[in-house]
Image (cartoon, rainbow, N blue to C red; front, side, top):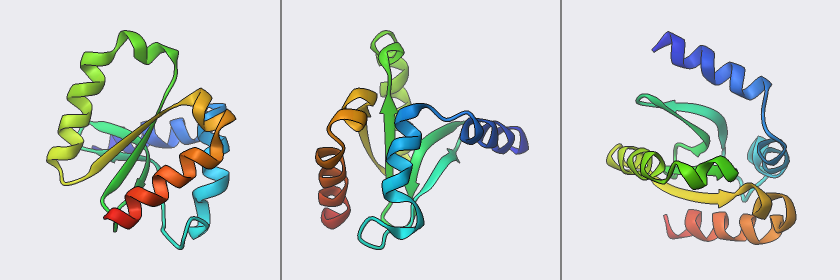
Length: 112
């Protein structure tokens, strides 16, 4: 488990443009007062963002995920089995349609 936390730290330090961009909007309780963490381990997986109190995980997917659909589906099922809801967004949507992404996250948080 310690190894997973070290990997999460490494991922935080080498975040993608989309992760850095979305983090600017949701860090420090900026999104309706909800606290998010980034690169957070759940089981053997590390989710991009998580709001633990709302039980919501947010994953950002780049082009490589087109070839990893089975893996992503298994990953989503596992995270859901741990009591979390999972939202997935394409990196391009985060970078070019940030407001729509934030609105969807807010709707999911409100639906809680």
